[in-house]
Length: 330
Ligand code: CP
Image (cartoon, rainbow, N blue to C red):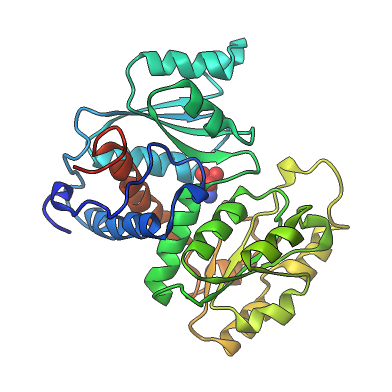
């Protein structure tokens, strides 16, 4: 990494004022964020993990849903860039006294913050918040809608192991209906030219996915074993039982038999392609969608994804905040 990210070349095209959806980023912008992340990643190896880039800026993490990875990595990212970082969670804030999202956000913004990183259970919440405040808004996961920084860190992690993702086959398996990760990953992976196949039981395929697949050129399958041997990367999605109101599969055992990355499937994957990698955005349901053997395999990138999360979020904050109000780095 260069001694200061102030020395980084500005991106060819602006990263917009907010990051609300993966669709906000064209290929040049994704490339710029991933390339900056690669430089930021070097900071993690340093003894003193601090850059002066965002000194004097204030970032508020506003989390209305639980999080381990996203929240802590945004906090670390902001701190390593020398921003002042404040964490506010739904539990323990005045929302528990009935304060609305709008009043909460306006209250926080009135304190003079530069960026709001928001996670909320309502799809569209980050977009709504961006209409209310002047601060930069980053979507850290909104309901079942999107999780754009997860998609960026997933792409970054896969690229580091596989190289250019153009033409690479990424197979995403599991609870597509409740996953914001899959939507953002689809957009970012297609932006980077990857071939994507989504695999799920019919009950966990979102309605309208067929038309989207046709329009955007990705594939759908209910047969994990048929798709597995051609995969360069297999991304397992968490079964989101907390978002399920009905029975989406007969029993956990039957789900695992059909759609889990079990030991036999891990062996089949490695036999077909010894360089294939395994991803999971976390948190994992070990023994349900992914076996411990697969989660801890040499081909598993699960902890690499977590590590990349800090670098990618540093890059996102840098691109949004280290320039002028348009997000242009000067
Ligand atoms: N992948 C992800 O968003 O994890 P957390 O819910 O722990 O942030």
